[in-house]
Image (cartoon, rainbow, N blue to C red; front, side):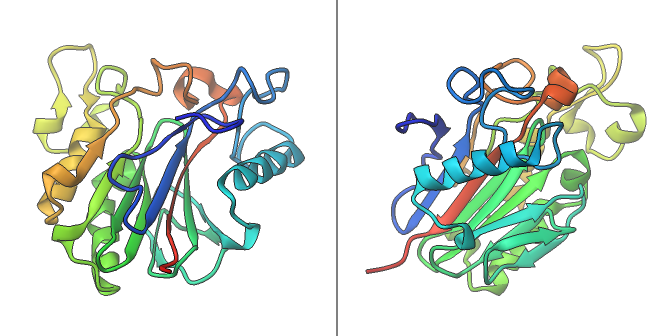
Length: 252
């Protein structure tokens, strides 16, 4: 979907009924096309001047009509720490967040890992998580769903979005990583080294936690193959970060 300046993906089941959500694309042709990292790079942990990233974040907030104090950023560490968020700001040592507060925006950054957005519009609880192989193998889906349930969410009412991420075809791993996953999600035979199907594993984790399969949207674009997306594996230090965002809309 295109706004006036920024191209987004809008999750199909997490927009409307009291919830809004977005996933930013790279936007490399229209934003900062002549910079060290072209596009809407939203990651302060990248090889770009902090003031450029700050300006990109301001542009994003202006596009979404949100104030800086509404935005809660996870300072991700590839673990499974989930925090209940009450106010905006940056949260260190955090890979997942939940809230039942209106107009508070949860934000996750990715560049090959998956961002997971979750919402129960009936009970008014949302969540967001960052899942690379460590988070996935560490059951981050279960942990974020459990935190949502603590706030009153009903798993049968949760809708979920799994963002573009690295695909099985491109997710080559060593045997020490492959053994962290059930063999159903590892291709040991088609390639020289094992390859992991991250998004399928995450989807099935959510289903195992009681999230209805029909309520889970898996975006199938691969970050490696699609140049409209940032990819650390493909771009190395020239990779920026995309952002997945979700908020509860205040009831009138």
